[in-house]
Length: 555
Image 1 (tube, helix red, strand yellow):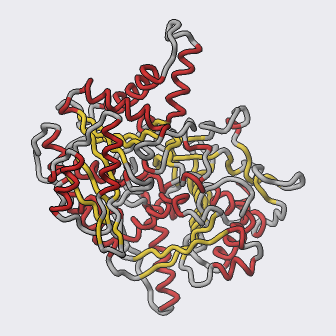
Image 2 (cartoon, rainbow, N blue to C red; image 1 turned 180 degrees about the vertical axis):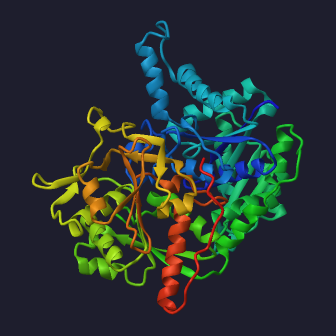
Image 3 (spheres, rainbow, N blue to C red; image 1 turned 90 degrees about the vertical axis):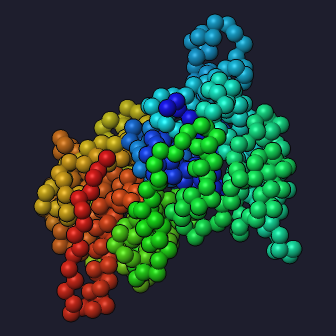
């Protein structure tokens, strides 16, 4: 079949959930056997989110081919169970940069460079490139809200694509909000009407409306919306708020979203959707299960989206170990003393220290890691979290009291974490780190191997610093195991403390490859360890058996 393009726009308010709607539609199409890819077009002028504050933009999601992207790509990958690429993340900054570089090279042969056609043509080129892999469907989410001045070139570009690709090969899906007014007890459709009016003024008539609301939208209300927006009532889809994002695809399936999509692009439904496993995930995500309390220590804890993939990976592991993950956010900046760190860990079953940058909160993280190591609390360190674990071990076990990282050390400190050799020649910040998927060789006698059940895996990275060669033999002499390295053994990828219930740090970001239907093995093992240690504390005389899981299929 010819590639079909589905463009997802949003109106009324920002943060409406367009990304989840796009990911849910992708899930429902893949469940029917169609191949799907998803692309995010963002109107900001940054080249990519790599240099943007997590407080403003949430986490940076890294693709296997090394793109620093918007966090929505994490949702896309987790829902459609497919690795996306650089082609799936396009910003206005990237578009303008490409056009201006071509202008400087004289490629426009003296023409006056304008928004139309040069910028819109560049946007269309990126959209068509996303569909060049032969996917049946390319779902394209347009960031921002209809009416935003910076988004206008993207809206014009997708309007042109409808003309170029043909009526049945391009579909416009518009997401809106139907607010509920408590004082009158009514759902109000006027904001949706105005949003569609704005969209139509830009030359786009939506084919389908997905209306976000607190409650069900009645048939008369849908007919009213359809009448004023020129959309058939059956194509006005109700999207009620759900307790879990994993329930959104099932809700949209019941509303008949995919039926409407397929009808409008002229595709007959080949097979019935297979959502069996997804229904189990959605059900367990809301099931009442034994609770495990896990602390996440960082400096962006006031915005949970800064650690979104970590949170989702913990949830995935909880679903498959039959427990409910209760996250306790710990501000590392407040744990400036060992006593404060010990107090912060009270009542917790495990500690996770995720990635990050900069000196702020570092000493608090090290104090927390000391408490977790000495109190036998399961610990998981990711990227900077692993580096902090190495610093802590070097100081408190190897007696290198001035151990620190070259990223933020004082002149008389000892750099047990150092800048990678390849990074010393890099200029600038954006896109210059060690990015993307790299191989890791695992020691077959390690705890890490019990999860992966294979000696060579691929994991995604985003860092500039590594464990120094100087400290490696000292760490191993004092009981720390280097259980994972690059294939040539030059880079430390995984460390662990063998005589601890579960103390593992990784230089990569395993959370980026965890999926609802295929949890990451290290998160599985970490959560399992927290359950077992909790059971031992509750029932010290009970010998708990370790569960066994199917080997992880690493993409």
